[in-house]
Length: 86
Image (cartoon, rainbow, N blue to C red; front, side, top):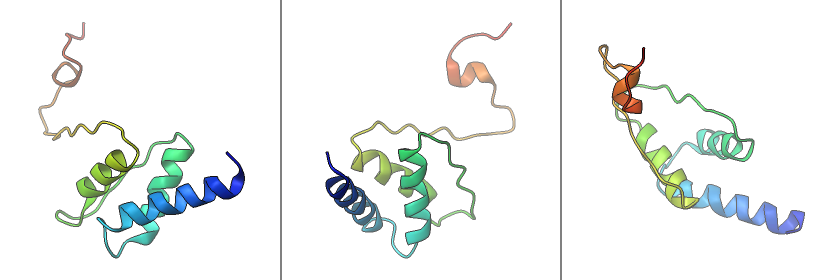
């Protein structure tokens, strides 16, 4: 894959996600950069602004799986991992 094809694919990915998450091109670009650099991204905002939708759209656009964990104050590692921590 040459650089032009790579650039086209990235723009297509951003456009695809941007069609779902509207009005936030900067956060979409940041999410794609985090994916490409194999980094983590912490998405913080008030409820109802599309954080989960962004993650779902990114996963679907790249044919990856998406799992959501609702954190609570009493959540333990064993609740996520399914094993007991000694």
